[in-house]
Image (tube, rainbow, N blue to C red; front, side, top):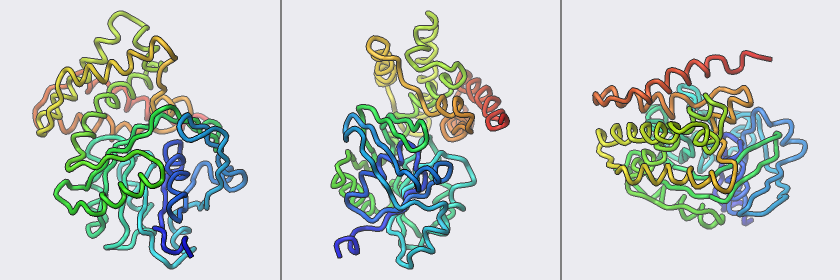
Amino acid sequence: MASDIRPKILLFGAGSVGTVYLYLLSKVSSITAVCRSNYDTVRKNGFIINSSLFGQGIHFIPNAVRDCAEAASADSKPFDYIVVCSKVIPGTIPQLIAPAITPGHTIIVLIQNGIGIEDEYATAFPTNPIISCVVYLPATQRPAGVIRHGEIERLELGAYPSNAPSAPARVFTELIRAAGATAELYDDVQAKRWFKLLANASWNPICALTLCTDAEFMVSSSLATDLALEIMLEVCAIAEAYGYTISREEAEYQLGRAKARIYHKNGVEPSMLQDVRGGRKMEVEAIVGNAVRMGKEKEVAAPKLEMLYVLATALDSQMGKKA
């Protein structure tokens, strides 16, 4: 009977980050996972999670489906939440999750990278609350079904738009905490999105284009670290134009987190670098393209960020072409 009163959650995108939250939320909710590329492996063997925070060798077998239509048809009870942890591919995800959305009921939780990603969900589902989340959770899935998670897990979340009712976000924050995860609720989470974009819009394309981790890139030449900081400062300028002030010291702090890794590990492998190594499409538009376009709208010069966008777009155009 306890499971009948727990919230019903559908997780869309059982990659490395999604799987960690899938495991945690399974402790406090009835959860189903939409698995696409890893469906056969997960159905047969489940997941193995090796986490420095939550434990090693965790064997976890979730209820897995191929798509949202299958999830919706399996049970007439509506989903209370759909947690979207997939890659941001503009113009695709809303239509894929639509079969599992009950208008006016299902809360849409976006645990995704980038800036300016929420509007297409708000347009597609105008009566459904949206929770926007910034996630810090370094993890990889290699091979399929095997998750390696590092030493950080943190969600920063808030209602979208910021003037929307905060109750759904507050309840989800409490649910995440009850699951054993870390969550902080903010009145305007977009400030946190811009802050994370300092690292994402610089390291993701840089590492994808150079096939280096962040630490490897910084030791590659005497100019490398300064270039990364200059790109971060361009992001600061765009954020400032939209009312979000990020100081140079905060940008240097983000850079310092990467610099610290030079001395004791090989550095971080950002998601775009993981995608390139796996021959997969990258989140170029959400992480870089949207920021470039928003800068142009406010006439903010960002030549280095624009160059990264052009080069990353060209690289992305070749992903998936080779067998």
